[in-house]
Length: 271
Image: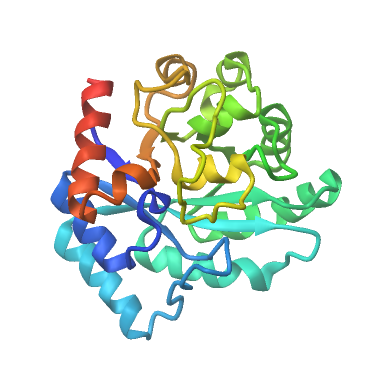
């Protein structure tokens, strides 16, 4: 089975090193974060003329890995073409086929219009925008994301954690399986309880939902997400991208060792 690894699995690893570690661990595809989510993240070198961008191109070429997707484009009330065109241009050069989109505009009609404009541009670059419902963002409903995707002609991404945390239903997926080209694989308990005093990259004062999403996801089979049922409900050729940031496991291992753990456990679970 061909597996990808998502950038959140080791967000502080530079892109070229991330690609090399993913290849060494056995992954066939990677995702890259071209647009930061938090102020603490190092911005990706979007200019194709930069040394860092050429290093990413070389790492992909040398490893033979495919670039599955690029992230994270947050659409809010002010988003416009100048926010996404540089990402699309860079992603197209690197060979990405999927653009991850999150919704931070509380006005659904405006979000839908903005996403429609983005979708037209993305298709010109050979990319499919996918809406990712996120429990702690305004766009936090799979049912609503499906309606919008059908209206504008894009797709929806299933993040296993947010499927659980948003209270989504398998029928939401199985009614429109073709809308789901990728599953972000991880696991989670029914109720997340932060460990008192435990440090996290997200910061100890971060809300529990963010702590879990960014540094406490579980390995497949160690939680309550109906992963196998999700896979049965979406399109059979959906890509599987391992997205498991887990600070407790990461702090004890090198990046390559951690990626090897993620690959082995994910592959074993899915076998």
